[in-house]
Image (tube, rainbow, N blue to C red; front, side):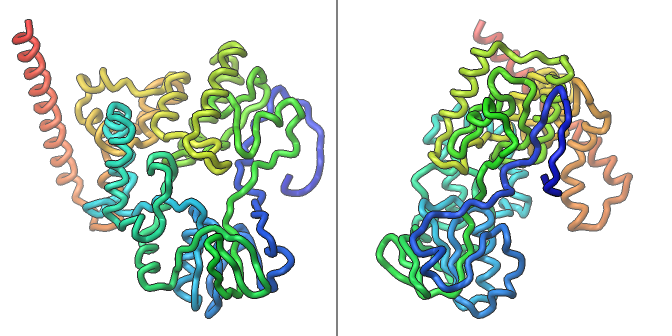
Length: 403
């Protein structure tokens, strides 16, 4: 596809790994293409903020690209307007204590707590965390949907750029004039340039007619977001928007596809595939093509890992390896967890999980002496064993009282 050359090849299966962030999506706004006389580019073409120095720029769309572009431009432009129809939830990169936010938020413990708590209670708890960074309602960004229903926009400095006035939050765009934009509330702003950050379209012109209906802009109806119903000869890897890391999810999808195509993992009957694909496509909480293939990181990874046979056995781990259990449950859900056992396991996975705090700290502090590191690990292991034994004794005591 990159060279533009066509070729024919007979194959047993086709795995589509071209993603869905290649063909820009343009909004249909009156005047954008004809009436407006300034420069109009898609975020896909944006490269350097210096090209917009001392200019008045409108950025349409507040996903990751739009928000980051607006912030970067705000340091060189005379004014940046950031247009968003529905608002968004913004998360800082750093959690309390200076750790990366996903280290503290993407854990099995929190994921389990969210699944056990009433939805509104868990959602509002997360929103309190995000509003602790800045008040989304006061800044004009609070959307109607809950924070857990979307992949948050991650940025540390957007609030300060809004406070300084270099970035102004505006609503949806109504139309364009020769040198201005009119918003849906009737207000206008004089601008020099427009950067469109409205995402991408799912473009697969090579798909056969019987497969194409499974992948639409607003609805992706694939079994596990991978296989068209009843057709294991075509598979999609990377056609998801995870709330969490993308590449570990794509890798897990690839492992699942490899097992299926190798004949080691059968797909269920067609009716079961159809019901699952329809249920998943209909359960997206936000009516938007951007969220048509959204998945929650841990739940989706566990789902595929369970089918492949690589989901970690946490119950057994709690008894046989308390140190690893503590890291797997209360630490970040690292993708190494899915290399601990089963097909294509890795003998270095355990050490990689246990050593992740040192890898984070290693870029910030001098390297720790090996003997100190061994002593710390031995001490931590002893504490884990004692804590696990204490919990088991307490449970046994409570059970004896109940009997």
